[in-house]
Length: 125
Image (cartoon, rainbow, N blue to C red; front, side):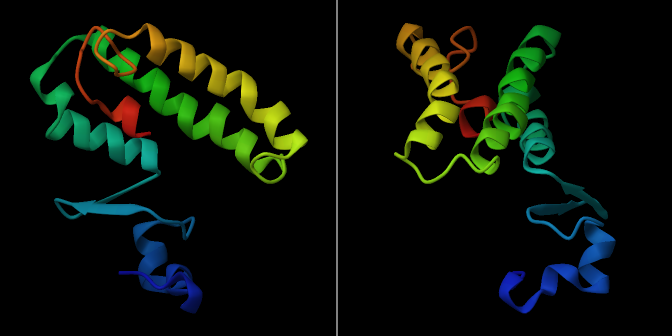
């Protein structure tokens, strides 16, 4: 466990795991994986839905939502959109949230990628 309040994430030892000094970090097989999207993709390919599928299309569909969550959506949150419910937040977030709501409302399985029909890294991202 890394105590960010004590700046343990900026220690020499931690920076060897993640040179950006950010969380999360996953250590596996003597290597470090950082960035939440990369960790999700690794876990899904190793243990989850992609471990059971070699379909490039499934991988691309999952990746697009993981990348969306980690870039398009998260950038809106961090661009100073204001507090949840404020006009700035609503203007910044509403289009993306509307797309998510539409995709999920049309999904027969209730998951982002209806063709896979189960929980994937896309839903977690």
